[in-house]
Image 1 (tube, rainbow, N blue to C red):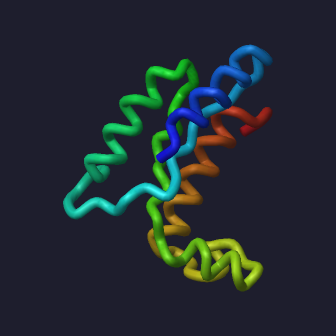
Image 2: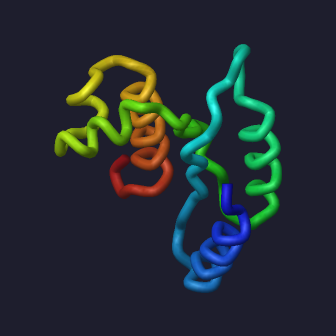
Length: 102
């Protein structure tokens, strides 16, 4: 996870005085409940960059490239499955926090 690139982007967003959030993606899957240790560590570090971190993390799932290769969203490719649930949670978070009339 390239946190140095995220730090630069967060700085640009803050200096432009625009709303934004950090989305963790390509995260390793958890072997138990909750986030994988690397994801939790990255989330903690990202929380120091001055932008909120979106609660849902996008896990590295095969559904994302397969859906993309087929010209589909994960909702079309695997409706109701884990990738679709992650994207739905992320979209809900963005709509509520960043779009007018969310």
